[in-house]
Image (tube, rainbow, N blue to C red; front, side, top):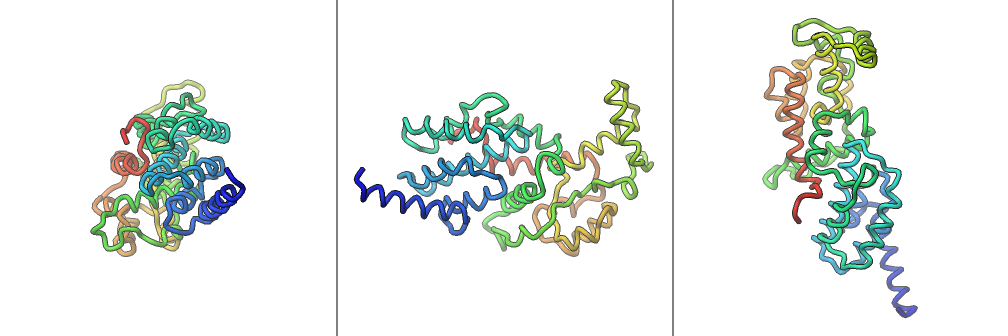
Length: 300
């Protein structure tokens, strides 16, 4: 490569890098940078620039960026480590250097990764963690939980929606429909109220290998459900603050008056909110998530 060719390449890469870091623009790399801003994805930058400077079409570049995003998000939901990402993405670069860079070659390289330190979670693992494991608080911080919910909101909309790509979601709060502090306003199924201290007794019983009573099992189910994806929502911070730990009927009436989010539509139709409804909503949201962030077993 001549010095002039090298200069052109460096200039092109600097332009791509600005778009990647700023997230400004409609290019595939700018959209990728914008959506990955909360994921501490500097380990992907070299590969992202390689994709941007390739001869691939804009659609193919978007598909490759989407698979990288899926890799990050699925591993986060499944609680898998991020400590080897620098090594993993450098290995991917070397592997892909020996072949044509295409959506299929990148997908195959990502799908070939094995073990908890590097695998791309398949749908069964992703779904199990989505439905049952603590997302927020838990495996996600607030910005990442908000980013996922914002993309779900967009994914729930169609081209016929008045606003197919909603704006201002970054200004909303992540809300727990069943509050994290549920003891005062949210009785158990038998209509009795639990005390916070009982949560500690459940943990002690489990650590000591004791069998849980029916009441302790009910408390554990509730505690396990409250941080899962099915219980998470987006609300304007003012509405969220005003509701605090109120019962579901109060929350639903406030939603009727204030919300226009598709995430909240199913909530408006319900008369109660409990662990069963949390699982049901989690399953419905997972169907959207599985399309937004495809797994390694899916054919391109």
